[in-house]
Structure formats: C-alpha cells, structure tokens
Image (cartoon, rainbow, N blue to C red; front, side, top):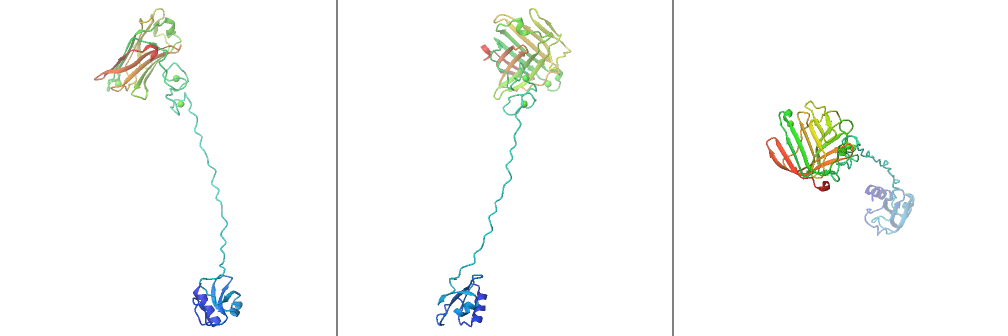
Length: 294
Ligand SMILES: [Ca+2]
Ligand SMILES: [Ca+2]
Ligand SMILES: [Ca+2]
C-alpha cells in the first residue's frame, strides 16, 4: 500500500482510521481498491465508487491488499540469433612440398622414392635391402674448420649383389646415402647425401668407382666403390670430406642406420649400428645389417 495514497484517501473520505487498521467502528466502511494502479485505501462504499474503485466488503482491510494487482506485461522474449558457426578447413597435407605436415614423417620436397624420404613422406624401409656382415660409419666433425670434416661408411661381406643392381651411375643412376638416428626414438634423418649420375664414375664391368677431389657432388661425397659379389663377398665404401659435407648431429649415444638407395630401386643397408665410440671430434658406429634388413 502506498501510504501517501492512503492518507489522501483518508482526508478525502473523512475516515477516522489509518490504512493499516480495519475500520471496525464505522458502519459500512471497508476496503476498496483502485483498479488502475492496485493501491488500496479505506473508505465507505460510496466513496469507493467515487474513486471508481472496487469495494471489497465491510470490515475488510488493506492488509493484505485484496485488490487485483496490476499485471506487468513482460516484454516479449527476444531471441538472439547467433552468427552461423564458421569452420576452418585445414589444407590437406601435401607430400613433396618440403614441409612436414599432418601425419608426414618427412618431406624432402619431392614425390620421388628411392631416396631418404619416400613418395608417401615416410622413411624408407630397410626391409628388402641388401645387408652386410659388418658395417661401420665414422664421422669426424671439426667444429672450427669444416674443410677437415670427414665421413666414411663401409659395408662389407654383403649379400649377393650383381653389377646390374648398381645401374649405370655414370649416365643415369642416382644414388642417395641416408644416415638415420633410429634410437632413441623418434627416428631422424641426419644426412641425405645425393650422388647424381656423372662421368666421375668409372668402371662398369666388375665394379663402379668414384674418385674426385673437386667433386661436382654437392653433398660432399668424394669417393665411392661399389663391388658386386656372391653372398658374403659384395661390398660398398663411400667417403665424403670437406666443407661441402653437412655437419651431422649424431650425438654421443644411440643407434644409427645407413641406407644407400639408387634410382633403379636397389638399396644397401647397415644397421642398426650402435654408436660404439666417441673420441674428440670422431664418432664411430658399428654393426651388422640383419638379414632382410631387419
Ligand atoms: Ca608436406
Ligand atoms: Ca623423396
Ligand atoms: Ca664441422
């Protein structure tokens, strides 16, 4: 009840009461309401009519207010329409673009196989490669003078290899030597050394030999010897040196694997080869290539 309204009604109606007290002594005095705003005042029924109120009956009170209260019309609910969700579609990994994406293990910038990263961007498997009865990899890294860096890989007592397996490196067959760090995981490729075909290769009847000091082989390979043979007699030796040779990060422990692959689809593998010696600038790994490249 609005008190000011009550007092106004009190003086208007000459009621001798307060709003909160039931007018029990006055005949025909009760509570009425103003329908307009829901306020309740005490007055006679006739006065209630004058106020265009709704008389509630004799001896009724204002407390609790018997009058219908104005209803508040709630604003219509508004619906907020959220902007449509936009989705971003990531581009599919593309093998051969030089960037390792999605599930790619490697990406050497091409979709060719027979190199250190396959056409499906995985490392080449040693399974099916020619294997050796004894292999070593030695690497000398001079930290201040790269011209003194040296790399040597020997693969001997190998499984049966024919001259045809070597292709024709003097004119058409490309070689790539890959050095992998296979343990502890994950496998990383530490070197990818390409030997493109060229007339620095000689031989072709009983062996292939590469020897050059001013090597056009940008990977730093300076000599190679490929010898076929029956099981236990085939061998491969590859050496590199100088500042063209990349600095390898072989670490001081773990296990390496060397793969030599050529573009006629043959491969020679050594490993796994534990790093057996680290002395000064020199790192050596040694082991056998398991049968079937295991
Ligand atoms: Ca890629
Ligand atoms: Ca490749
Ligand atoms: Ca170096």
